[in-house]
Every structure is written in structure tokens, then in C-alpha cells.
Amino acid sequence: MSNYDKIDTYIDKNLDKNLDELKKYVAQPSISAQNLGLKECAQLVKGMLEQRGFKAEVMATDGAPVVFAERKGKVDKTILIYNHYDVQPPEPLELWESPPFEPEIRNGYFYGRGVSDDKGHLTARLHAIDAILAEEGELPCNIKFIIEGEEETASEHLHEYISKNLDRLKADACIWEFGGVDHRERPQQYLGLRGIFYVELSVTALGTDVHSGLGGSILPNAAWRLVWALNTLKGEDERIRIPGFYDNVVAPTERDREYMEKLPDPAEEYKTRFGAKAFIKGLTGGMDLKIEEVFTPTCTICGLTSGYQGPGSKTVQPAFASAKVDFRLVPDQKPQDILKKLRAHLDAEGFSDVEIKFLGGEPAARTDPDHPFVKLVVESAEEVYDAKMDIVPMIGGSGPNYPFVHDLGVPVVTMGFGYPNTKAHAPNENFRIDLYVQHAKHTARVIKEFAK
Image 1 (cartoon, helix red, strand yellow):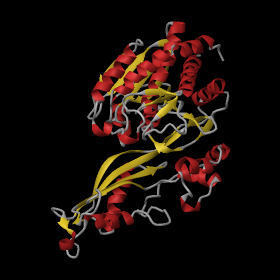
Image 2 (cartoon, helix red, strand yellow):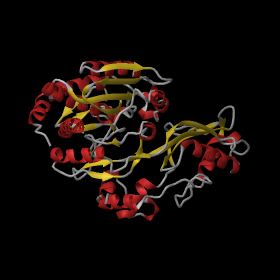
Image 3 (spheres, rainbow, N blue to C red):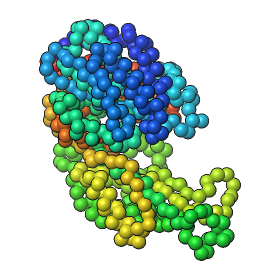
């Protein structure tokens, strides 16, 4: 591998300037769930890329705009970098130690909403590009960016955008939005993401809420109706009861099992991190837990809303009830197929009155661990982290990697500065600055080695 002393020195010496840029980026709220600040943030991203000599464009979709940018390099090979500029809502605000959109650095940690997921990953990669340009005056290969604003709301319009811009987005490899180290400080290479199917189920039982003394004996209760419908989705054995739900599930291969076997048992670390006394399904740890965590589809009630939920009592019979439910999907389940099966199941169980609102979804997708780009990323990490990168064939989370893998046909790799206590989606989201620097140095090596 080449000598990276000058590039590493640039990254170290210019860190404060780069983090100041990140502070401005984080200070611009961009909450996709609330359609807040998205257009303004897209323009900010466009300017950040143009400062590096990229030809950048804010492209409209039926939702949040997509920022596309490209800059030619010395050789005609292309890396596509995917990030997103939208963030999760910051609530509950009272649990933040500093305001979510007023980023702060404290004791080697950078705090603010979106700093890890995903704004800091973009600026760390730009920092690597700055170092290369300062050293060489040009990029060693072509680099394209696609930066969307709906990742936190299931990337509803990204797939359509990609299908309409296949030629523009054509590349040889793709660096995904996130990555990081585990609790042992070992960098992780996540080669697959589960799919997701997200719905809101709702029941309207009456035209208005009713005094419970009047209606409790004679009128339908929307909350009970919804609870009974939800109860049909999954049994106490945790098996999902929708007919045909498991029909297309592809079991993990022996190779998957070999990679998972090499990973540490996460049982005790999970119990400590999440305050869990035990796992469901009788799981205790080891290989069974590792496989179950990512290769089994799920049905999760994410939220329930009905009736009075304030302090004290209010004797009311609710007219309306709703629940947010997500299904994590594995290869080869498809969201639209599960939607049809969910509707058929509720109808067959006598719940045709339960409305289904589809809130987004995408299938699972994976990258071949034998692809040369995967090997390049894994090998170039060792010099930076002084540890070998673990290959993880699939993780439990989801993201819009399916159109990248299947439509664009590119290998998708993960690399980043996440760590177990980054608190993405939670109050006090943060990253460790030392890991941020390591990610910038790793990115520079990947870009330069790829061009060879």
C-alpha cells in the first residue's frame, strides 16, 4: 500500500476546519418525517460539494430533493458514494444535554442530531477528498455522490429516482452511508441489509369519542378492536401468523454461517447496552442468537395511539385507534407481496374494517463477499484501525441498498465511524472524534487504492 503520511497529516491538521463545516451542516434542521428544512439542507449540501470542484445539482422528486454530484478523476473508474441529509426527529427534547441542532464538542465526542446518522459521514468523506486534492491536485478516479433526503422515512422516492437515472449513476462500486466498529473496536464490513415493510393500521369505530359509562356496554371500542386485530398477527411463540408470510424466506447459507460463527457472541453486550434480562424465543446467546437476529423476519409494534393518555383519569370510549407496525424482511421477501398477504389475513380474520396505510418499504439486498472491492476495503482498513475488518453477511437494520445492488449492479460496502453508543435516533446522538478521523483516513486509502 502507498505511503499515506502526507494525507494523514493533512487530515489531522485540518480537522477543526472540517468539524466547523459539520457544525453548520448539523445546525440546519432537516427532518424528513416532518418535511422540515429539506430543501434548505439540500442546497447546503450542493454548496459543500461545489466547493470541492464537483458539478452538483439538486434534483426534484415527488418528495425530498436528491443531490447528485460528480467530479472526473485521473483514471476512468468510478466510485459512487451514497449518503442522506435527512435526520430523525429530536424528541424527547428534555433528554438532550445540549440542544440537538446546536452541535457541541465535549471530551472528544461530537453531539447533535444527525451527527452520526448521517451528516458526519458525508463531511468525513469530504475531508478525505480534501486531503487527496491538497496532495495531488486531482482525484485519482471518478467520484459521484447521491445524497437523498428521505432515508429516515423509508426512501420512498429513491428507487424511482435511480431507475430514471441509471446512466448518470453508473459506477463500478458504491460506498454506503454508514459503518463503524463493534464493542471490541473491530471495524465491521456489513454486506447485507434486511428489507422493511412499514404500515399504519387504524380503526374508526365511531364518529366521536363517547362517555365510557354510556357507550362501554353498547358501542364498539376502537382501541379494543385494534388490539384484537394486532393479536392475530403474531402468536406468543413469536411466529408471525399471516398465511404465506414465510413462503419466500431464503435460509442462511453455510457460508453465511461460517462468517457469523467468527463474530463474537453479543449476548452479554446486548444485555448490558439495552438493559435486557433475557431474549425472546428462549435464546441465550451463541450461534442461535446471531443467526436469529438477522436472518429471521420480524413483526414489531412500534407505536400505539388511542383515547386519553394524559395525567389522571378520563372516562372515555375512543372512536379511533392506530398502530405503527414494521416488518423486517429477509431475502427474498418483497414488501408489496407482504402487503397483499396482510390485507388478506385481516379480512379472513374478520377485520376488514382495519385500514392499512403503507408507509414505505424495500426488499433486502446483499453484496458478494468475494467481490474485489470488498477485499480492497477490508484490507485497507487494517492499516488504519490496526485490526482486521470483520465480514458480516447481513445485519438487522434496513436501507435502500436494493436498487444499488440490483438495478445499478454495484457492490455496496460499508465503512464509517459508528460505535455501539452513538445513540443514533435517540437523544444525545454523538460520535467519537478519533473514529471520525480514522474513517477519513480509511476513505482516502480506498479511493486511492481503487484507482490503481
